[in-house]
Image (cartoon, rainbow, N blue to C red; front, top):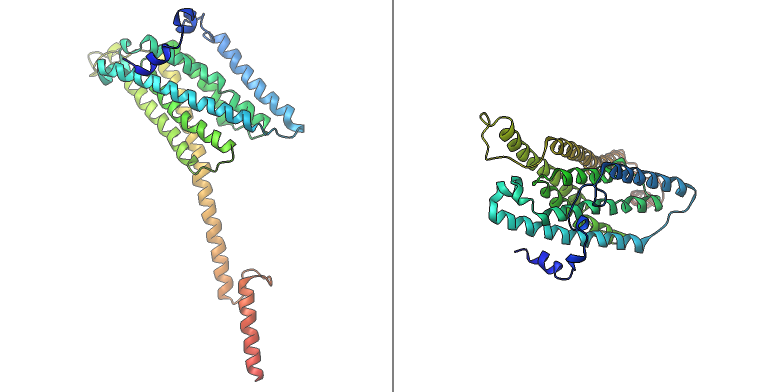
Length: 319
């Protein structure tokens, strides 16, 4: 039995929780219809870009304490939710194996669906990330704004599609968020962390794994439902073509954008730094070969050495 979930439930009066909050009921649970999702996304964009316009003529806000508290909440919340999903999936895996944990409907338990619902609600709270950026007058990149908007839509589609394999995306994303929001929490307090590059690498890796799992689930779905006598397969896989297409499309766009970000931020910038260093060394070498100082100022080391040598030689000739 899942220990952590039972431990937490022992402190919660479950009988007092309304059914539409204890489980996901389309049309009754919060944010469970397309009009609400669309309006929330539109509101997010309006607030973010509206805040940016309002802050144009104002000084940026520091917001150190609120920002750190926000990031700490998301870091801790992501850790707990990831652990809950992990122990539920492990319990299912012990019963139905790897294929079953990814495909059979029995593995999409009520608890797992509840965790997926909580993960979905997290996406709306994460909108606050961008509001803080706007208030601090930080750049609002397309990747950041698009990622937050599309992830809320993706989580909604996955929740309604009830595809068992979607726990993989939620689990990996929560794991990345534990580290990411800790990084932001520490950085907001003035810490200088060296592993931002590796955090981006982890984000890229998670998209690759999610796409691989989606391909596995899609293959079994197609083989079982469309080509049962042609393609070898172990059985059906829960979900629908809509969930697969929307999920694969959004995750692929993330992968492309993050690869582009990685190349621009780390690869190209590192290459530019090397070019600058090489160019500076070449200029210094050429200047040294010609017998001229690389920097023609009295304070330069080469100028002082050459001046001392010249003075010594002149004095020696006078003797």
